[in-house]
Image (cartoon, rainbow, N blue to C red; front, side):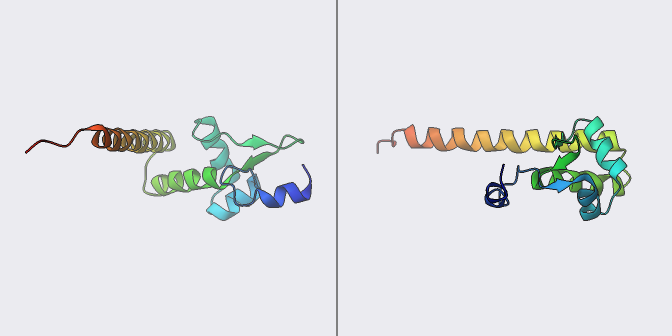
Length: 112
């Protein structure tokens, strides 16, 4: 990938633009915390050609939510589970809304 290709991906939430050190600094946490999120399988950082962890903005938002919960006293494993469940709930609500819209558009109007 050339530098020109990379510039075009800066707006991509899934582009792994941040090193572990930069990600930890942005979140105000330690690199160990990010490793723990990876071990708990909450986020899976991509690896550079040299094997270094790289994080996307989407992953940083998830890590920031985990940090919020941990800062409130939630154990890291429980925080990860909460975030996974929140994500599943959001997805289920999105699917339900789609089904609702689809059924409303296919239901014939009631006769009067």
